[in-house]
Image 1 (cartoon, rainbow, N blue to C red):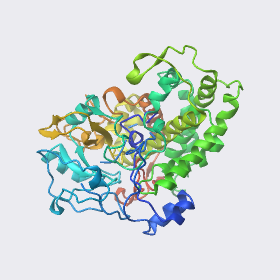
Image 2 (cartoon, rainbow, N blue to C red):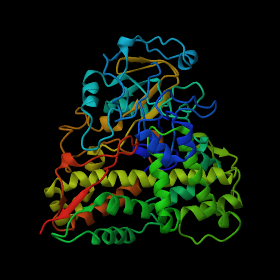
Image 3 (spheres, rainbow, N blue to C red):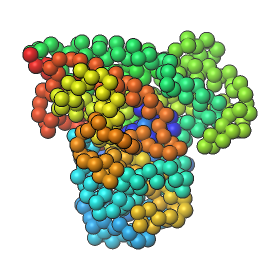
Length: 526
């Protein structure tokens, strides 16, 4: 799960996308109409210029995502818009000037056109182009969804370096003159939600909620929810069911509603807002209108507790709303940047807190729904894995860790900005350049994982980067592991459950930051 900050390693940590503006009529009609217009081929052209304050990535949420001249936009599969060029893997990099970004003559020659990243939003396997790039050089030039240049990191060692080294700053991704990964963010607290919680003295409450005990999500409750969803599947010989909405999205959504203290009846609307938020290629105006709908809904749910009503005890939303309204118990006890002590705590506005809670829901729901769907796809194609999970429940840990490594779930990449001149894998990087880390590619690096394209649940050690690495390691990692272990164990207990179509016929939702099956048809053999 990606949580505030946005947390890293999972799709949420990367919820940053390109926003080619669509026709005004489509954007004005709302996100759904805008999406339909884009699917009809409308809305191509240059991206809208981001506003002066918060550029670059949209943040919602575990694992973040996207990869010099501005490129024309078309609608289609990720990565299909640009020709494959000869890669520039070494030498001084060119950072387009502001004039170039606004339409001046590009320095990059046409014959050096860069590949458009991401290359694919399919989850059945890692894009072969990422393996090819890593084999040539684990740090190579690409074009982002926002039309700028970036360095794409595909090697495991190099990815760990970027994610832990303070010379590669996440906080600079939204700076005015930084390259654009996808599109402008709606509000600064979406990019750095954890820091806003720290400043308000609210971080410890979130840390407890996501800690080892998971007080809002007892394991018995999770197991009951998983069993209830699976019990509704048709029996042997009873036809097909779609496991993605019936199990993966349902368990993810109900878990996040309970974590936040939201009524389960809210889930259809919450899921629709989250799904729109994670769709790449929608107009910025439609994305922001969609987010305002989610934010305003959460503000309405917060209002009674912000106005003095006693929180019921369960759920982050009522507890955070009440604590924020009461003000910090120790105004001098907040943590400042990077967790430094001694800052003065300040309450968040209701809009800010609702935005942060929106980050928590969207990141957690989408990351869990994505990972559970992709992992189920792989498990259902491996009856021996399901047999082992059923007969040897203690093997679940190894299966969860290997599925976290093996599954391709991050539709883009984790973004950083180089803050000083440095070298990475023999490539010179200049201050201000964007660096994108593909954790999916790093998790398939043969130098770190022998036979990386084989699913090996006994793999030890398994130093995958699904939750990031270093100071921004995803605080929702424990939650994801617990929910996944329960889901895998209960899934394996359903006798005869198999994919109802060949694996190659499973479709994938296009242009998603959190990769997800379009449908996961299953049946039970007699």
